Amino acid sequence: MKLGILSTSPKCYSTRRLRQAAVERGHKVKVLNTLRFAIELEHGEPDLMFRGKRLSTYDAIVPRIGASITHFGTAVVRQFEQMDVYTPNTSNGITNSRDKLRSLQILSRHDIGIPHTCFVCDRSDVLPAIERVGGSPVIIKILEGTQGVGVILADSVHVAQAIIETLQSARQNVLIQKFVAESKGKDIRAFVVGDRVIAAMRRVAKEGEFRSNVHRGGRAERVELGDDYKNAAVRAAQIMGLRVAGVDMLECDDGPQIMEVNSSPGLEGIEGATGLDIAGAIIDFVSSQVDFPELDIRQRLTVSVGYGVAELLIPEGSELVGTSLGDSGLWDKDIAVLTLNRGTTVISNPKSSRILDANDRLLCYGRLESMRGLVPERRRQKRRPKVRRLKKETLDSLETADERR
Image (tube, rainbow, N blue to C red):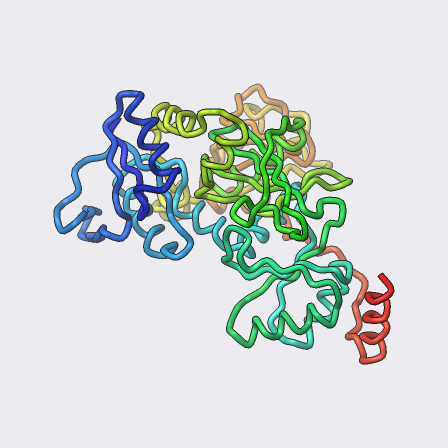
């Protein structure tokens, strides 16, 4: 396998370890500075230039795209995808995970734990948002911070309001997030490769610090995760579109809550805490998957007029409940079933003998008009209690309560 590692820091620990692991396994490997690419776009011929010369052929890449070059870096990864070069983390996956708001929006649609979070723009919406997430103390995060930068714990409503207004005046978009008291000062980093967690560590903040990031002086220790934490980490990475990811979770009374899914997780902390060859596991996975570059299904399948991809629902009382896929008549209607989703279980390429249950969801490709009657109604939003705007006397009472704490 000829492998390219996209990195602007060839001497950093993670890049060096990946290169070392690839060489030890007999692969040809080169570290490619992401910023030295030029994207060539011509009719039917996507191509890349590197350092002014046409890039030679690669079988796979491992992207290490830093937050400061997300836009250009993902454009380069996207070009490799168009050239059918395998990457464990797609450009969409990296983009999804890099924006904290975007990643939580995507995860919120699925049955997976996340901290209660609000995103507001108008200053008059700040106080109601703080109240909705549970009041002070509250976590404030800028959207694209890394390594704990831009994460602030506000002990009172007044302080939270002042911080948010200051950040917004500096044109920073911020998230307002519930503070999970039982997880104060610690979190879990699960390292996902493919469809399993290969290592995990608990990060504990240093004295006087609530952020547990190793870069902020936190210490890391190896931890064995239960199945609920492993499943949550793998599902979060897959939902984001990532095959190599560091999934950060809070240990809450009601189970794991996903804080962040990192598309370029550092290797130094996890290898140091666990003593495991994480870099080698990544290279082995890439080598096993190199013949299966990521395909954008919608891009490839929707080029035929009148055809497309849709998710169909088998509702309660449907005549299809209790029948097999083979007898459902879907094939006769020019509809092919790609996956069957039943609860949290995903059955890929289901057999014709598979019996359909009520509330099964089918990811299908076929004639859109034939699928119209089975497209589920748009989900109705749960009605929440109205939150009135906080008046000055209410704010004063909240601040008094903060002081008593």
